[in-house]
Amino acid sequence: METMEIYRGRLIDHIQLVVRDLPASRKFYTAVFEVLGIPLAGSGDDYFWADELFVSTADSEAAQGHLTGRHHLAFQARDRAMVNAFYHAALAAGGKDNGAPGERPYHPGYYGAFVIDPDGNNIEAVYHGEATFSAREIKITF
Image (cartoon, rainbow, N blue to C red):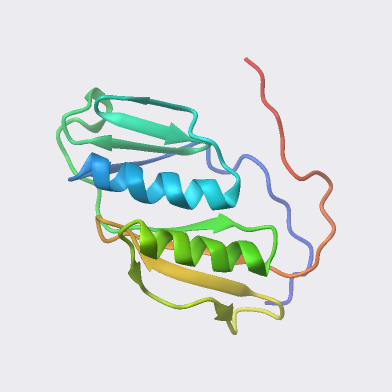
């Protein structure tokens, strides 16, 4: 990858995963989000959400009765230790190994780990190496 300057922002407003077993998914994602420093933002009987990710049952109004297919989601990590913590927390919370933490050939400094969530989604935590950020996060108030 030649581009060494990228812009991150609000490309994705939100992603919805519609799952078979909400309690298993809640356990998995709660553990993953805890080590990534992302708080759960809300929940109900048939859903929970954090940041841009909304997870629900097929019975929820937003799902319209259909499960989503297999997806790959990559969460940003602040350092290699956070990638490692993600991997171990995900496995302890019911995830399955899909690539232990380590450097990947995608570009210099790419360090990631991959875990399959309870619904077969490939979930990754990635650290792209030392970089300068214009801001660590953005705050949106409605």
